[in-house]
Image: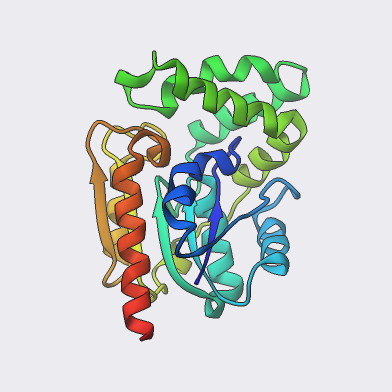
Length: 235
């Protein structure tokens, strides 16, 4: 079984390194390149062109928006879905303006300064001082770079409303969210759960937006449970 991971904004494969390490002996893991275009639609087209014929999607934050677009374009290719710390609705006016400011900073040569602004919102307050975790996030940011960040942030800013897509999802789905996620709070995940019939919901205590890194073991168990259910169903 193929598992396709789609990272979040300003993130790389390292976002899912704990999950890949836990799954790669049993499953074929792939990580999507989500920085090639400046629209969610075009990013999904590129990912689908390179992806296996059928796959399980695991996506966090921006990756969740891309996952919804993949469901809109090619739902028949997706066997199951894990949506982490994401949502279906567009930005509020305040959120959109915050994105525009970060794009402007990146264009003006201030990309390196964005980490200090974003970091306190990305993780649980108890982990803001955790240097090892922060170094991973800084490393992903450096791997992404200003140009890819601008494309990604522009794509997120101009994304469509995916609520009509979500209400039509009927495949096995797991919804995961950090209890203290400041970027996509649990209310968004709860809406996803209530809108996808038969979905599984996991809210992780003492966890912020980067659940795959902050609470890797809990996320690993949830994703592995989804995959094992898929294996049993196919036997």
